Length: 162
Image (cartoon, rainbow, N blue to C red; front, side):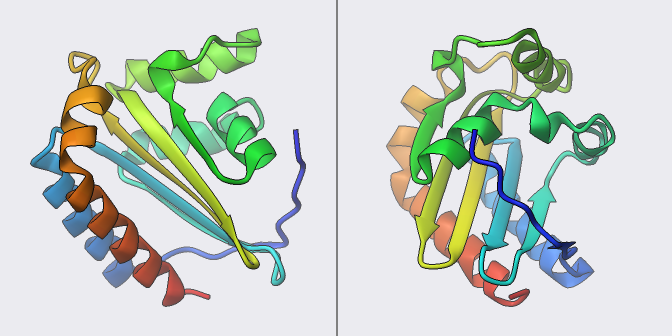
């Protein structure tokens, strides 16, 4: 796995977080109930992130799940990637533990996108509920215009931080 060191984690302001929730509400129309967004400026060695599920975010950070998260590992290794969660076979017990913890928080059936461009790296996860196994093949793919607009909106918000 690529190990990239970040010197500073910058929180999004409350106003920007409210804008994230507005994006999530729009995504709710396509059964997306979970959104996370991370962007890193690799030149400045700074990162900022947003998780729509606060309890999951706390668990993720408190347990250092980023170090065991297969989604993070694959995205970091590939730079630009599209990962459908249900297509993963968990390589390690700790990978499985992280995905099981997501599932326990009713976050499942998602897709993670990552992009590397210039000095910026971003990772976006869209998830649905455990009872919606066709989220990616049905809801996500049939609403690509909304997804693309959400990506543009997320990028605009991240530019307010860096």
